[in-house]
Length: 313
Image 1: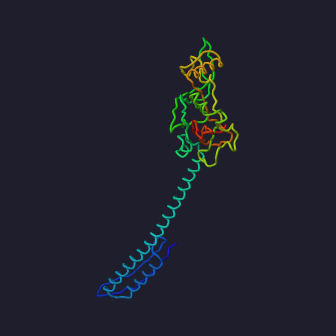
Image 2: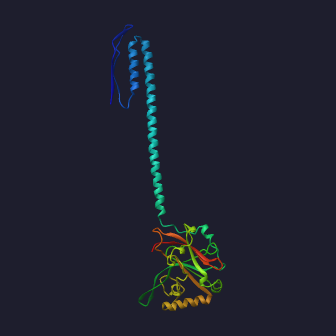
Image 3: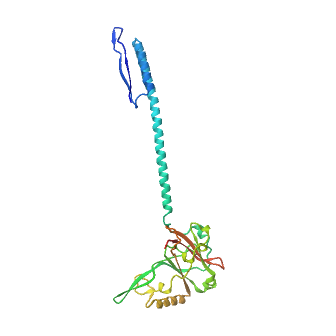
């Protein structure tokens, strides 16, 4: 909206000179002068008209100029303050939005499958190792392999996708992904001296909440790796010519190859053990990590320990 004022001044003669003081429209728009500026201008112009001298005219014009400059400065300060508040408001909104996005990302990350690495130092410190150490550690999965028998392409099952493992921190096995199996051997006589099968038990806790105690207190044994006899001899002694390129092999049926593997172990005075990172109906949708140890109830020490990723069935 525009505010207009009209001021018509009479013709005057001064010192033989003719002056026409005719001030036309002064306008204020919403982006222009304030009402106070406008009224001040009218006052000064009126005073100028009442004065008949050139000196007074010059003085009043200077006052008018100063007045307008002061008013403009005040208006600019007000506009600057308003703009500053708007900038702060927008910055705050963006900051809140970014904070919300960051929080949402963290929540989403919390629902992702945990990364499998090495057990934490706190978990490892809970395990006391026996003097007896597992040997010949092999990590793999149960699956099918093939071999040729004349023109026929035969298929058998056994431990495939093998890789060699090693102990760390005394008796900690490599961490296992879901459904992976750890095979190992121990000296038979030394192992028997530590007690019978009743003296051993698998204890598992949740890596993220070890203080909750063993999962076996509230879960069936089928939900965690309670046994150390997952594999049989035929799973280790694959058929010769196998697609896994395992050199140590034997011919014949599953039972004959199991016998061949037992003969191999007996010849070296070893006993085989194997554990599997089994799935569970009780695991959360994104999975969870469990830390387990094969615990001797008589000595309070463990033959081995490992962390694994437990996924749903």
